[in-house]
Length: 627
Ligand code: ADP
Ligand code: MG
Image (cartoon, rainbow, N blue to C red):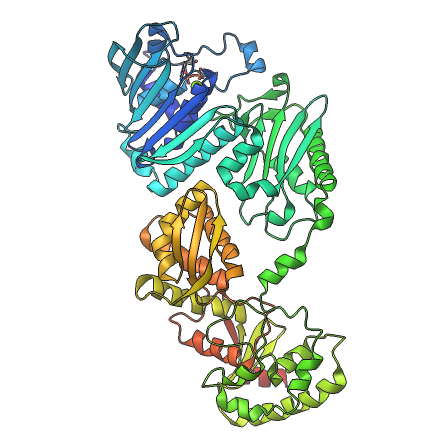
């Protein structure tokens, strides 16, 4: 039989390699930035158009390339960074595989201009899908400019596979941040479609972190430093109380290269043991320096995974270094979960020891009187309302003095409560409950465990999860305000000024119109600062920052692909933050408002994230239980 094996032509081999190296525009960004760093640039500019789909351009002031090198760099396995296999174990550069430019040139229209310091003129090369179109002398600055246009122009399947511009931009920003965090001494800038996203001057690690993530980050950082024989660690971890609900700000750098390592991540998490609230993740920016002999970076084409020769030692060192820092900077003892918990449960009755006055105020309170006023909303509460809760649903006012509140309080097992006083009131409660049975169906609700609202139905019993129900109600309301009719806003006496990272303000700018429909009024959204003049009726000023933080992290986690999804995600996130929480004591007015509000919804059965809102217990089921 004839021989059938052939060597693949270069352009095919390059396209295959490109499949591994270039997954999306962000991969090109990473390779080009790394080349500029390897060329010892001090200023690197990244310019993208249409999320990198149309153009990715990196300009550097590095050492540039000779005429011959400028041509050779596009060949496969063409590199100036290693010469022999042994070099792989003493790498000081980002690149070494010599395949990035060859791969990129195989799947895009690439232009390169480069000039070395001592050269009079530079070289310009144009190359389309591996084919060199032209090479000419050109006038250019010292350094290199690489432009990558129309990525995947010759692989439609790949091009169509790209995500929305929002998603691809996000990936680019992630890569940019990783590289910029690893090299604070180099100045970086990023422009997208003509507008500046980052302008980062040369600085130190801490300041670079702050420049990227916003001024408020500074106070959250705890320095970590440890020198051992096998490893030096330095960097920062975020104070536990600022732990985020997303894993966004977690960075390991090994010898100035961003890497992913679930194992080392575990070491960090272990150091935070007992200090974090559930489902929160600590921020960290950790720079590890290890003798290149001890690591192998060549286990993955994108070079984000590393093999260490002694992982266990690394784990132990890292964990103890962080533990030590958290202890030394007194982070652990000043931890104040209470403060946060309070914000989470705005209706929380933690200071409700002062119950005597309430009982006294209401000694002569007539439940029947209040019963009649339920429908006309909050006139009963007018005389007793002394709520400190700043997260009130608009449909009701806190009615601390009413018998219902007493009843729930009585239930909630407060040992200090004065039972002799309460008993008298609660007798009345029981009495009136029996009365209620005969009256209106909807007036008959009570709260269980500060979590459920129990209401009777003709056919049985209804158990509603209060938080989920309110989330559903708010979600539908918010969707309506965003899409149909703007919600009412409350003017703030003094504008609220909040600080964010540039990326976060960019996100807020994108969401501004929708947020304004829900009642927010933004006076300005600048690079690192947002001024808010008005907020939705349903929230209080102190809740704004928590709510927006949650919103930003929701949008960081899940980038909506369409306008509709964006609205939906916004409504979901706000509804979740604004809804009354489990643990909130609700008076009857509030309970009823929730029951009625819920059943006025289009989809009362489930929360916006598809979780059950209520269960029913039919009378016949009950009867079976008594058999
Ligand atoms: P690698 O970085 O792995 O060597 P690349 O394909 O990324 O492979 O680059 C090939 C070669 O081109 C590099 O080794 C380097 O000599 C040269 N080169 C690439 N980009 C630049 C740049 N911005 N400035 C100077 N030289 C560069
Ligand atoms: Mg490279």
